[in-house]
Amino acid sequence: MTFTTYVFDAYGTLFDVNAAAEAAAAEPDHAALQAVWPKLAFDWRRKQLEYTWLRAVANRHCDFWTVTEDGLDWALEAQGLDDPATRERLLELYWELAAYAEVPAMLAALKASGKQTAILSNGSPAMLEAAVQSAGISEQLDAVLSVETIGVFKPHAQVYDMVQNRFGCARDEVLFVSSNGWDIAGASGYGFHTAWVNHAGDPVDRLYARPHHILQDLTTIPEIT
Image (cartoon, rainbow, N blue to C red; front, side):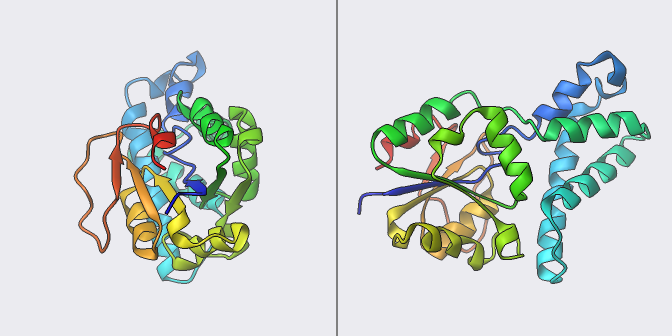
């Protein structure tokens, strides 16, 4: 089966979730971040994800911006930082996260070969629109799908249903791409073909399904046909 539809997670896959903390740390007004920004960025992302999973199993959904704020507040407190201006700046920068360098060319190559492309993300519609516009990739995407349409976070199967509902494609026509091992397990178990972008060289998660491809970055995605 030839893939017709290439679907990407957003945060950590197309967009660098560490970029906000790194950028703020370089600004004189937020010098307190200089020594701690990598740990803060790590904790921020970890708590952001944990809160989505816990809210999903507890059936207490909220929008992704709320868990993003809550995760940052935890990470700031863990570092002993209590500066409202720094908090505000970090949240402001999260709306314009940098895309990884290879993203525009990779998406352009897929579109040039006639493929359908989409984002499927926990992010709220407003967050995703801001990130896509900031990265300048809106013209290279056929759809930006947010879980807010259904009110449950990944890796619930209803989230992956959104791809078929939007594109009318079979599951085996989809290549799903994510940097998150748990998201790859969800998509693989659902029936999508998957590519895990393993930036950190981590072991494969011991879950119910494995990735079909393991990559260091997104450069070679157009070669997976």
